[in-house]
Picture 1 (spheres, rainbow over the protein chains, first blue to last red):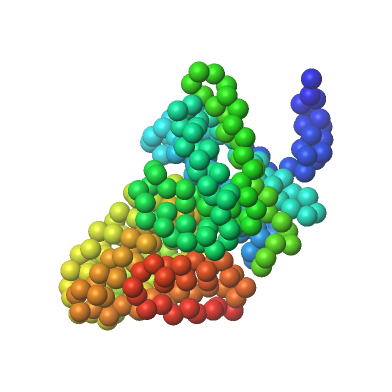
Picture 2: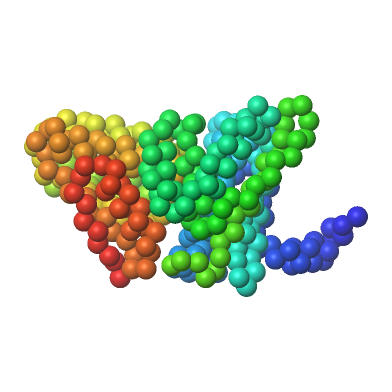
Length: 180
Length: 126
């Protein structure tokens, strides 16, 4: 059993190079805290802006598409819940998101991810421009943005939970010495 | 008509649309979760403002960061301005400002310039 005393918890966080982790409703207030935190650590850095933009797109997707929802008093509506974790090593940031999706949405999600991963930088640019003109719930703009900001493909995993839900994990790494 | 102003904060952009000088400015950050609702009054104002033809409009775009959802709203704004520029005898210029070294932001501007029929100037800020 993991040691979840503050000392044990701090050790787990350190071992996994976690700089920020959040679970629950992804509200604007939470994102502002993330932005503030990244800016303090790496002020005026293009890299931290890219990391932040990936976190924002993940949070937005969780908000809209997580099948686990809760009522947000500040938003006056149901919003999706999920998990976002940022880890940082000497070479890279890895940003993870996890949330439940309904089983019947899995095939289209899989298709979107595979399609994006098959595209090179110039194709991604054209795809982004094209997708931005599609109706909002059909597009892949958020996922395309994540890939373009990271310079790396989407690493994803879909694990069936029960007859209704699948757990969707996404991991995006941003190399610290990526194209500037 | 009245000018339109929003004082920006964390995830909300500063907006200064002046109906007399025809200078429209937006800057700061935009990652509101519900951009359709947030941008609704801005779109409303623009719709009324652009009903008057033949003005020479300067749109200063000084955003530092925005999410893809806001990027859709900006596309809608550019589409409205393009229609004005093309069909209402208007003249619209977009000044796209970006921080020196922030090539991502320059690229984002170039992508709009490719997608909409408006003249864009790209201006680096130091």
